Length: 134
Image (cartoon, rainbow, N blue to C red; front, top):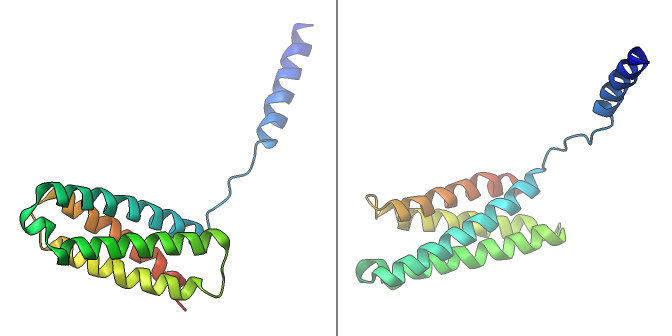
């Protein structure tokens, strides 16, 4: 009886392992959509930070660049989510441009960790959206 239980246990372990769901790799579009969502959130957080800090942080050139990036990232995320094949490349191209501008603007605050974190999110977004530009 004990041997039978051991045998059943071994069989269950062997077959149970093979019944697990396979891991699926994310597509470039799915990764880009996630990057756009993260970038928009980071830019919104940075925009809130800038308006609270005031001074050079709240200048229109800084806040408008953040707003442009937020808008472009949300739009691209929406197009990617809907599978709007015809508009994806154009939306991604616009997002790449907005994110590059935003990162450049954030780099002017090179000693501020919050601004640098935003710039890094923008660069990450550019990396994957660039792959979808045709």
